[in-house]
Image (cartoon, rainbow, N blue to C red; front, side, top):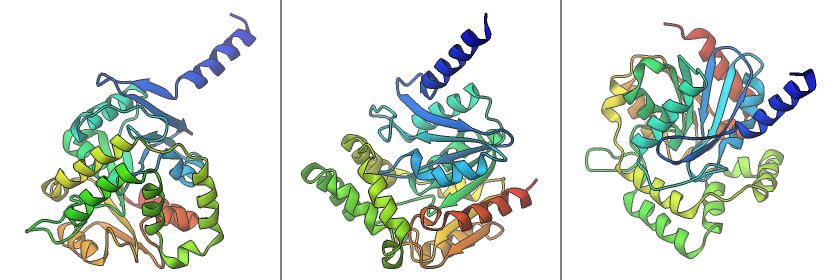
Length: 285
């Protein structure tokens, strides 16, 4: 085979390979960059893997980085499924690309995915980093944190009547007033104009997952280093929730970003990357 035919085959494979269909029948879209220790970034509800662009660019200089669209988001396909099935798919994908001893960085819903991945495959995980995330997202009699269930269900109903503007309003609400006044937020708004809208039915199903999943006991039993990163003014994973997390995992690292809401890695990417890098370098078992 000539050099040019090899090059053509390589280029063709790079165009095809960002999609992989798993046993569940879901077609997953992902990106892999860099070389070195393995990092997996998992986004939250209503966005996609491009939300991690400032992180993948930075960490791919020193690490092998995978970002992935959760089913129904970005360019990944969708079918009604469970969190457990999604996580089993994700493990298959990690194995397919020889991602071992993975540090998983999960934002919001992505943190729940990361914790479920640890529950099912603890030997595959080296570290966990939770960004604005918690082991249970719905309030209950024994858990006063997270989201009001009635409001979660109302949001699901609103998706039927005013979609996708409800998603955009919700996204905007996750930033503080100070963040919304910055040039970076204005850039993010323009960027979102060109995004593919997540599948409505997928978003509704994920709200059900967020309501039902309770991984508090899993978090208590984690045996790898953990970092929690939060915006000081995050209204979802708020100060009271962080206090709860500190009681459950007092030995973990906690980092806070002032005048930030739910997405500190978007508002202050440089600072966010620095605290993650410190954790990666300082947390060896």
